[in-house]
Length: 499
Image (tube, rainbow, N blue to C red; front, side, top):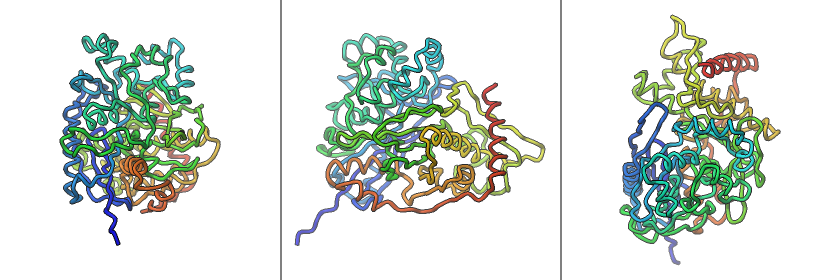
């Protein structure tokens, strides 16, 4: 009897503050994991950049570390999946691969005034109809225009076909394949402001509006297919198929096995991101949410409604690094548990503006309700409550747009390990919070997409069968208390928008 050799997939999760690599086996067990952070650059208030060389170094280190931890040979990797911080954009030379500028990060607000100009000119309704998105500096398209306008010589070189744009999936695919493939997946493309949501192709109307040469843009592909093979990438042997790509939040929806219409998830990372599977037809929001592509498998496209809060885990990082209130992020749970409630303190973590459903790039963070009796435990608890309140606003809008209640919300990301935060979230939302055993569902999702493309898993049912639950959280406060908390939140929220 011939023994079947084990099969492994390498999942690369290129995130906002660092890069993570996982080695996943056919049973969806994580055998190796490594993460390496890189520097965040803030050249002006509200501006955020990444050095692409430093970012790429973190990817190399993460891959090497994960392979070493797993105790396998790189030659045993059957496929590679990529997931990434989505709207962050890079511009590089097609010949040398050299970046022309630091990457402009999704959090960066440098194009806020340009977005306001486009809104004042009446473009937003048409932009929403075409792309499912709103005119906000969050998205890639206006960042691309800034690079072309502000980097000396960039526009001329771009129009001559010498330069390439890409979100981080596209940039890593280029690097992994030795510059042979310039492509992106449809989920990342749907976040650029440049893709026609219904057709799944670049919109000439949008590229004309933002003055982006189409020749600089990558080819749009599905989420699970062989895009190319590794070639000359130092951490890996040549010939490994790169076979799965998805934006981080879509990858998390996939990794949470939310394959059916109406299923929803929330990822607690630097920001908080709620997505609901809306099936084969996009739902256009009347409540400030985004319509986006969830994924495309074969010829079938699945759509999602999305709401994003720009700051979630980043608020905890601010308590740690900015205020020195805690020395490590996990400490916030015990500190918040040192008090029975927030003592009337509210923290609106609008540190980089407000995302859905408010979309106010000029909003600023607000701490209100402080008294002489306020302690650091109250601020810690108010921070967790602020994260949960943002998500409550988003989910309320999501249910209004979809016309149906959400009975359960699957959660993932680093802060999902915080049991107090999950309980606060369940108390506000009133629906069950389901936390899986595998919290790194973002990387898992891209790994599964890659594995499906090369036959490691034959269908989605196999994936669902391997998905397992760690904990459930249900509401344990009454409606009156929920109403009181929401009223206090709305009052604090209004103050952030009047500064």
